[in-house]
Image (spheres, rainbow, N blue to C red):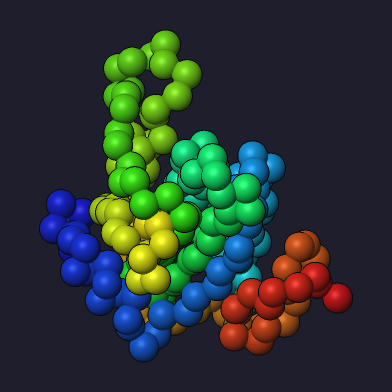
Length: 187
């Protein structure tokens, strides 16, 4: 599938795939949550046997969480953002960041604006993903930004053997036998 042909419909179809596996984490709307999100993504991809996706996925997630934290509603002192990863083996990794601010993201700068200190996040997301979109949260309290990264190095439905064999690993989260993150500390 050519990246120019990816649509929101493709992303929704991938999310509903019976082979899709997901993991998520809730984070406070604080600057230190950006690092926690990167760590979550890197660890989860290692659990699923996809360290090859770490660079692009952590950068995309980092940019989306940074936007969520930077543009959090000021009156929402207890605001949270949720980071969700969905892997459709052999097809895509979908990164989603949900936050309580309903305002849609607006790209502000391009790569040609080399002196800009802010505003490049969505340009980076656009460069690294086949498609990204924003939509209202199902509960009506904010928005969800979804980014679709294509993968094609494995047959559909096939996880890396090391992901299936791994029951836990050191780090902030442990994985169960299917490669899903357990929400808690590794033993």
